[in-house]
Length: 465
Image (cartoon, rainbow, N blue to C red; front, side, top):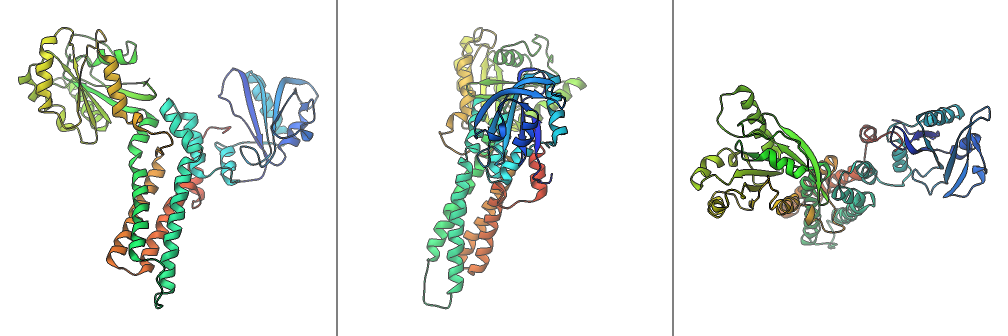
């Protein structure tokens, strides 16, 4: 994608029939070109941020549709250029004729993400804010939307700007140290340089550490539902989804493949993965399902381990051997002690036995998936384990893998600078690590980027945005 100063157009609302469709036109001739197909008050004389009722007409003067045109004059528009947004009725024919008419008038159909790319090129937003536009559009839960809106408002960018200023301060002190190394002048002690570098490292690593939670909230927190056959995994999935998504049967091995579905609980989207029951089996197909279970268990952020409360404390050890060896300290384990409505007398003894084998931080939640007993409490445990409830207002979360990679590299280079200061290495070597840190942070906001990176980022946007 190559930046041009021509005038582009596209339908910005979703494809298909609707009550209203909106076409966006942006470029130096946007208002003049729309005026050519407009019957009503002249848009060329209209003030910025005003809406006007009129009619779209073709070259023969035949009416295409009644419309509302909203004028945004540069630089106070989304793209920083003159922009006209034309709202017409949502007929597919009307949409198609409007775009064809605009093209015949002199517009070019926009590439994917070209409106947002022009906003970036014209300084209306930096690259991190531009990427957040796509995240806002794609957000599928309140928590994901809140994070994306924070980034689009510039909260993340402002944090990076603060880091940039601190790095420039550190670099300037190092340069002064080099320039006056032979003079009896001290602009900053090595201890002061160390403190600045450590503060930068602390902020960078803290931002990078939010990626696991941020990405999970953005894409849906993966929850693997695992356990023995007939423990009630599929019944629990159906209960959580409020629909009969999985087949429920008393026959062992009914669930042989992975079943996935999503639902929003509270403000957070969860991606539940019902898996084949874990047991010894000679059935080839069931064995493949168990292999997939172990794979999904390993990848999940939350392991929802369903145990039949009819299980005796003496059986727990062998049951646990099918689950716990495949978990990691980064995962939260929630044990759903199921069927408490028919085995209530076993619950207390099982809870006590579980505390002796579960890792630190694991949670035991007695439930009845069949009747729905204590499901609300289980859902709250899921929300707490997702990390979404711990996000303070205004807290910056990293959700983009590109940003995480750049922050990780920035953390590595500023860590080398800290090591250099501690070891008394010459300032010119330390300055190089500081400049490298600036480079990696600049990749996030777009102050340092390449044409390939921009093309890759904006090609993932929808047409019209």
